[in-house]
Amino acid sequence: MTTTLRRAAQWNRPLMTFVWAMAVLAVVSAVGIVADSRVLTGVPIWLKPFKFSVSFVLYGTTLAWMLSLLPRRSRIAEWAATTVVAVGVVEMAIIVGQVLRGTTSHFNETSPLNAALWQLMGATIMVLFAAHVVIGIVVLRQPIANRAGRTAIGWALGLTLLGMLVAIPMAMPDQAQSIEGVAGAHSVGVPDGGPGLPLVGWSTTGGDLRIGHFVGLHALQALPILAILLTRFAGGRLDERTRARLLVVAGGAYGALTLLLTWQALRGQPLLRPDALTLTAVAALVVATAAASAGVVAARRPRPELVLAA
Image 1 (tube, rainbow, N blue to C red):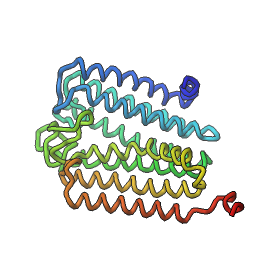
Image 2: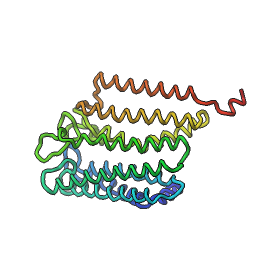
Image 3: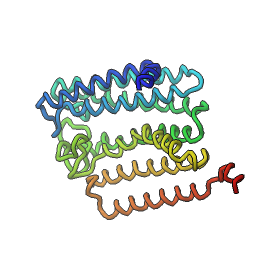
Image 4: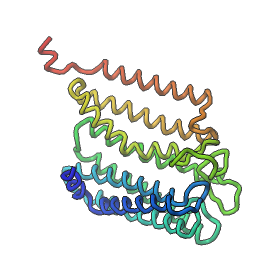
């Protein structure tokens, strides 16, 4: 464990420094949730910086790990990683600053200052998106990992971009809550700040666009973890080509799930109260994924030692 942490500390320095800073902020925010009784939009005021700091810990660590796999150094990727750090610092400074001021950071145009900060956050996200694209291109242009690992990383980077894109409806004009100074919303069909699921706060009375956003973003961790599990527990039975094809199926299903959850939210439907149409779509996705996976496994090439044994 100690060796692993030491090795991780040698990954991209700006990203890992940012990760450690976000880890500290997560602890501070957790204390704030308990110690600060203030509530904002129906949840503890320190919940947003806690969730964002944890998310940045996962995002930064995964990107740094992917960059550590490159067989040769890329200055372009390093500059893009530094850009991600700069953007993250600005984003978190605004979020924490607004918490200290006792007001919201997202969709807040109640004053010229709040509006400027919200617009700055929007601009930083666009820069983050571009930097992520650059990192993805650099990583996929170099021969990293094996075929299955490369497939997982490619899908992970792409689906993370999808996760960023499905958040766009939150800031669309028709998503505003008809409240002066509010320029968007997480919830659909109900005001922000209503009853929500524990910790994440996703609406339990209406749609919530954060769900698809969350699922899409964390493809960055989910697909590589799946690749590792396939290699560890099925590597003896499935060849690398088959594992790569299974990861393509998983990536397609993951992307479809992200879009399905966003579609459900846009229809003003709570996650845990799906209607018949949503359940039908989920069932179709499960059946299609299972059938595609079975087809990939059935079409796998026999391992050479098994052929010899036969």
